[in-house]
Amino acid sequence: MMNSDMSTLSLSRLVLEMQESATLKMAKMARELKAKGQDVIDLSLGEPDFDTPAHIKEAAKKALDEGFTKYTPVNGLLELREAIVRKLARENDLQYTPNQIVVSNGAKQSVYNLCAALLDPGDEVIIPAPYWVSYYEIIKMTGGVPIIAYSNIENDFKCTADQIEALITDRTKFILYSSPCNPSGSVFSYDELKAIATMLQSYEHVLVVSDEIYEHINFADRHYTIASMDNMQDRTVIINGMSKAYAMTGWRLGYIAAPTWIAEACTKIQGQVTSGATSFGQKAAVTALDADQKPTIEMAEAFHRRRDLIIGLLEQIPLLLVNRPQGAFYIFPDVSAYFGKTAKNGSVIKDADDLSLYLLAEALVSTVSGAAFGNDRCIRLSYATSEAKLKESASRIEKALSQLS
Image (cartoon, rainbow, N blue to C red):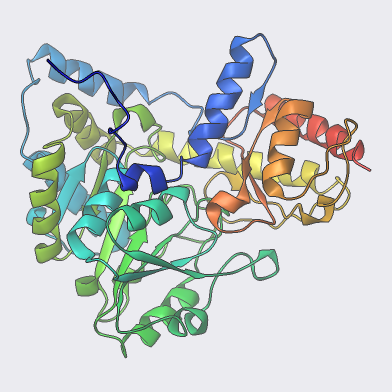
């Protein structure tokens, strides 16, 4: 008979030491308040509020109707990998082959595959901060050591080549960043990427992982990738996916473009974890990449208008420091001037965590503390919502902050 005493059972050290995703935690809290009838405006999740374009959905329906519901190759349908190769040539002037592409169940899995494939215990990964919340935890999960390169609002939340170089050691395996950046919306310019690429010529053991999932939500002159710099494609892994550009978050489709040896390693890992991504979703992704990009352009234009709107509103709030990000759909204001102030109930706002929770409770606006992104002076607001909700949320935030003393 099985022993009913559960005292000897325990969770793994891995899960006990892992931090819950702050964005998902705040989104969950917002949903719980909504379920209780509260009028919460959720600015916590990085999810386009647009529906997936109709022609992409029709492609998935067609695939279903034709019985395309079976397993796919672990690294993705050849048809989709060929479409990604065409996209990289057309939009990024980069030449790849289909065996250098690995399609995964979202770009988050792509990050995990890479870390599992490249990191041994104690290997270091340099992450410019602020960074996407999952980078830090995935690196730790796979035995790596996150090394943080800090920045602030005064330098537009962008680290320089010199800052990164100062952190390189013999244990550095790769640099991991996003541009446009989640959470700051900052975009590395050509010259900034060129300086990093030039610096790395002296460090042949260091790879670059460039997360470009927000590539098409870019308000600068154009998107640049470090893979296009001299001598960099063979030591760069590009991460991208369908979620942001095509409003396909729930479809869970990401991909990497990488040197063949890395792509093969990621395929090996994925084969033991999830195997291939959804078959009919991949068929729809081919259509998304190959068809007219007008819906994507229109969504980016809407985000640009919303950025200007929310910046104009937030700039009117005293003590709030706001920059003008060039991409993604986030604002990352510095709220540190409110630290030490007291709420009506007597509680003191000690840090960004407290302020984010205060805004949820007092203003019914869900944000995410910047501490989760490597900058504890800021909070992240997503403007992937309607202009009406952005106006209302800014009004609520201003009122709630004005009540602190």
